Every structure is written in C-alpha cells, then in structure tokens.
Amino acid sequence: MRIALDAMGGDYAPEAIIKGALLAKKSFASDIEIVLVGKESVILSHLKSADKSAFKIINAEEVIEMGEHPTKAFSHKPNSSIVVGFHLLQKKEVDAFCSAGNTGAMLVGSMFTIKPIEGIIRPGIAGFIPKEKGGYGIILDVGANADCKPEMLEQFAVIGALYSKYIFQIDNPRVGLMNLGEEEEKGSLLTQAAHQLIKANHKVNFIGNIEGRDVFNDKADVIVCDGFTGNVILKLAESFYDIVSQRKLSDPFLDLFNYAEVGGSPILGVNGNVIIGHGVSSPLAIKNMLNLAVQLVESDISNKIKNTYNSTTSN
Image 1 (cartoon, one colour):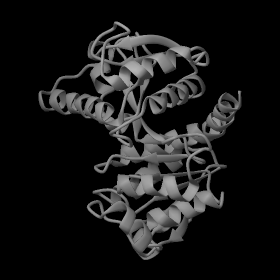
Image 2 (cartoon, helix red, strand yellow):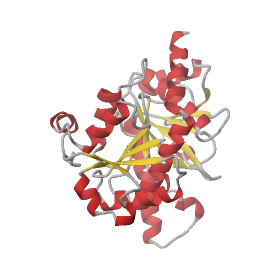
Image 3 (cartoon, one colour):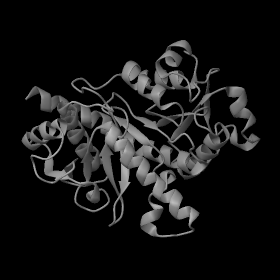
C-alpha cells in the first residue's frame, strides 16, 4: 500500500507534515509506504539522516498556496504538490492522496483528475461528529456543496450509509435528515423533497428527520445535509474543543472534539481515496489523517460506493 502525502500543504508545512509522517511511519506495517510529494530539497532539509530512507520523495517544485483561486492555481501550477499528487493517484501509483493544503484545489483535483464515480451528481466531503456513547457518526456534506438538489442529499444518504457500514462496522446504519423539525412535512423545499426520495430508497435505513439536538446523541449514525449546514455544524463542534481547552476542562467525550483525533475529511463519491486535512494540522493530525487513509484503502470504500451506486442506478 502506498499513501501519498502533500508535504507542502498546510499552515505549518513542511515541518508539521513531515513530523506527522514520521509518527505514522513508526506505527505502520512494513508494507505501507508513505510517499512525500513536494520540493525535494526542502523535504530532505527537514529529515535527519536516519529518516531519509523512510520515505519515497516525489519532487514537485510548485506550491498552491492557501489563498489562491483553486481552479486557476490547479491549471497554472502543473508541477505543484497537489497536482502531482492527483496524477499519482490517477495513474494508480498510489492508493490514496492526503493534503492539508488548499481545500478548493483538492476538490478541483477530485472533480477533474480522478473524476466523480459515474452516476454521482456531486461528491461530498464527510465530517465526523462525536457521539455521547463513544465513537463517531458521519455527516455529509460538510462543505463541498453549499447548494444542493434533493437528489444529491439522497446520494449522500447512500454514500454515508456505506461508509458507516464498512469503516465504522455498523451493520444497518441509521440515516437521519437534518431538519428544523421531526415531522415529515417540516423544513425547506429542499429537505421536504429530499425526505421523500430518501424514504423511498430501500437501500437506506432512513429514520426520518432529526434536529440539531440530535447531532451528538445516538439517534442517527449518518446525518445528511447540504454543505452549508454541515460546515456550520462541523465548525461549531470544533469550537467546543477550543473552548474547553482554554478553560482547562477535561472529559473523554469532549476530547473527541479535537480535530486532530480524526485527522481529516474524505471526499466521497470519486474514483479514488482523497483526504483533506485541516489547514492548521499538527503532527498528530497528520498521523491520524494517514491512519484514516489506510482505513479507506483497506476497506476498498471507493469501489464499494462505485459498485453499490452503479447497481442502484441500473435497477
């Protein structure tokens, strides 16, 4: 297994990225190789002599900065670490690609390099929400699609359920539609129409509408929403950890709100394994992002989505 990591992506790159890769390497099996993508001279300067043989390095002399326009930068910087990483994934020279760099550029690469799975209207970014009884639930979408069609929310329900089944090992994951009331007729035109579509999809264990108070309880394993709503929920959840840390409070449940414990968010619905990390990713976050990449590859989640969705659309 080979996991490509953008060594130049993130506010604290390359130092935090390389330190995280070293942490992950120590815990990985010998058959898992980390491929660092970026300016080779810079990467080597951050590695001790004993560590220089631990990674394969793919040189990429350009960097897409965090503030750059994603589409323009992706086309104007063909030798950037993000573009090179996607080409490695496209050619199947690596099994997954991870970056804490420009999120928009990662979405552009996913859409135009490895491309969405046939039949998927728009891929989504998955977020992970701590649950009171332990572990995480999945919320989809959390930022790729601020505006959605009802059919997109139905697809997120299918994709999220597959992820929950094969990554979280939940046999029949419960899917809830985020809304402003539990009643079927409640909500916007979008959620009302999406409710009917998801309800009619027999491949989904749909429990109906859920409300904001249900985000952290055990009511739903999968939360479906548009990217605008999901991003607000995810960022709100992330802020809890900052607040409790500043107040020096400690609790096992609240500790799960630390973004570094998850490491990143996969882009689901594309032909490959892609993970976006937080821009301020620490070495621990990078380590856990790489661990997540290994889980995606081992579960073969991308192909499971492809096979299941193609089967769904052909019936």
